[in-house]
Each structure stands twice: as structure tokens, then as C-alpha cells.
Length: 297
Image 1 (cartoon, helix red, strand yellow):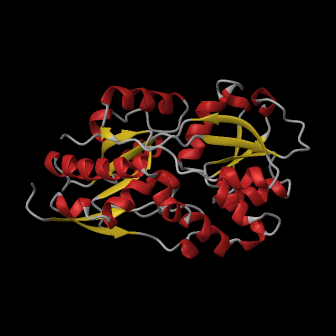
Image 2: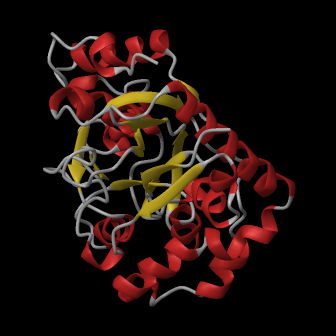
């Protein structure tokens, strides 16, 4: 076991990060010799995205580890020098879903040609949506529009400011109950970024604790429903109008806790493919290399 090591761990209060919080609450990090300080932002202070756009987490927030979309982990480590990538994975059986209004003329993914699709720009939604839509629409005919947080995207769809939006559960289930139509699903890819203080021993201890939390949730998902639904409750507090026309209790009853997976030490070959995809679309500097963005663990 490691000698007790203090770690500032950034937490995204999204459905796919439930194991991280469970590992903290059940003391699994502590038992691995990691004294975790969970760094969270108040949802009421977040207008666009949880990961600060202009500030670095490893320097400005003094964070040692932070989870983030895999594509954004590439951009952030290269463009901002905000740590290096140490792990990646899908994290959970939680696909993104593209929703449209029930009266929409968009009936298939190919109908999204030059149609505004609401995402949260410079987050996983932008990159994963771009990649998924390219299987149905030419790259130069994809129109991704920044609409902010999940409830903001639902509002934009309802008001007709966009013709489609991307969502992930529990907001996907909320969209179902609001009468919106599912059009397309695709996987969510995540990464974990570490500061220079993260070494192989610390990463392995972190992943062991995370794995114990995953095993607990997968063995008895209903035991974690209350924690899983906390984000939806937070959204209701900041955007009550989105919930006016829906039975919130019925939404909560319909939501199921997903099956989770354990992130793995970073796969350089897979990451190199993602990097090449981004470079081909002008999303990152052509000089970026895997060796510059992956931790030498």
C-alpha cells in the first residue's frame, strides 16, 4: 500500500462518474493510501460547462486528477498544458442520444444534413456528436450549435432554437417524458488526466479503489439510485421551468442505474487514432503528438 498521499480529485457530477463518488464515500481511496479531497463546483455557479474553459485544473485549481471527455483530454493537455492523460475508457453503458421534437421533419440521422444540433461546445458532446454524425452526414454538412448544459439544451429544443440536441441519462429519460423523440445513439468516451505528481503507483491505487466502487454498484444498482439522481435534482433547482410539464416522480422511477466499467491505463495506440481524427478536422494543432499528451508512467 502507498504511504498516505493527499490527492485533489476533480469530480464531474454526471451519471457516468458515480463510482468516483462512491469510492470516496465508502473509503476505498483511503484504504488504498489515498487521502482524497473531492473538488466540486456548485451547479448554481456553472453556466456553460463544469470544466473551466479558461483556467487549468492542474495549476489554477491545484487538481491532481480529473476525468474528462477523451477528445477534450487531448485538446486540453496539448493546448493548455493541463496535465497529461493517464487513463481512458467508456466508463458506463450510458450512450449519448440525439433527440428531436415529435413534430420534426427529421426522421433519420441522414436528415440532420445542415440541421442545427444543440451540444455543449468544447466538451465530449461536440466531438462525439461530430464523429457519430459523420457516419450519416458529410463532415461539412454537420451543424453543431452551442446550447450549454442539459436543461439548457432541452429548453432550446422545446423553443425551436435548434432542431435536435444531444443528451445522456438521466436527462435522456427526462426528454422521453417530455415527449421528445430518440433519433440516434452513440458511445461516450472518457479519459482521466493527471498532474506531474501522479506516478504509476498512485494511478494503480486509484484504479483499484475505483474498481471496488464499480463492483458495488453493479452488484446492487438500486442501492445507489439516490446518489445517481442527485444531478437531476440539482438541475431541477436551477432550471425549474424545464420540469413544469413532467411528472418528476415518474421520471425518477423510469431511470435505471447503468452498468459501470473500470477505466484502464491509457491506450496510446487508440489515443493516437483519436488525435489523428482531430488533426484531420483542424480541431488541434498538427504538431501535437501522443508522447506530448500522455503521461510517461
